[in-house]
Image (cartoon, rainbow, N blue to C red; front, top):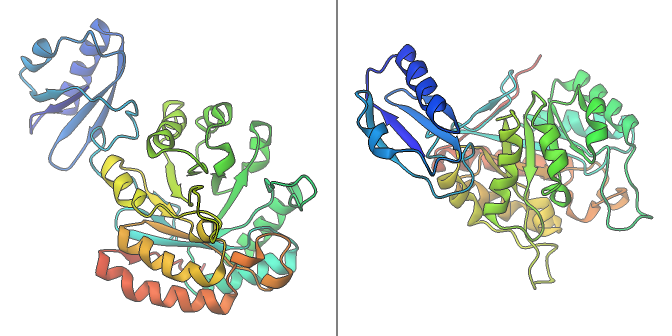
Length: 344
């Protein structure tokens, strides 16, 4: 249920009104203060709440029930865009489009620092890199794990770029205390115990859509994190599994504007994993910008033919530079400004 309060309602009146609602109903009230309005979202079992009684209150402008099962992630509860700002120009959302770039896997200190320096010089605002790698085959390279996290921190020290890397297990959270954005991969999108634990973490969570999950299921997974207390969630469309075999997955570009209409959370697109072919990454990146994405996750490797994972979909630093420069040119056409990481 959503309650819109009349203009001029004071914060003390909101607090008193919210306490009254909670005292007579089995719900929790979540308040959003906008520039021109105040919206109260009732979380929990609101079926028994008396709409007529609520509507009759002096400060209430309108009341309506919300049918969608996701509440905190719902734009109706939070009309303004959520913005993730890590300082220094690394911003996602609110009209800012961020480039998140780096290798699929961290392979060595030389490799990750070299790539980090290149992507920053080309305009990336965040550095991505896999330390823990979920692989289809148990015999494939699984990442450097804790050592990989340490190398990512070294790369951050050299460049100032905030780091984005994937977590696999709730037991690893202690290792991620110094990670700037924790990524939940497609295979773990519905690992609800992991999501609940990440809800207790005070840092942004980048949640990737599962291989065969619906948009509502993605939003419900975000709700798990938010319901546990962490509202810094970033959604990622990275392609879904279809009958097509010429690409790794099928990028659901329609998910971007649809998500932007349904939720206030930032939406980023990973064209690298969506297509699996480096030559197709650029056109899909352009399509994502045109569709309204708040960011792009691009895999970049300094030697793709010899990459230990996903070399076929990785751009070289030179290719990323070309892509980034074109993104800067086209983004304003679609109302976006590319985030720029300031030199430390």
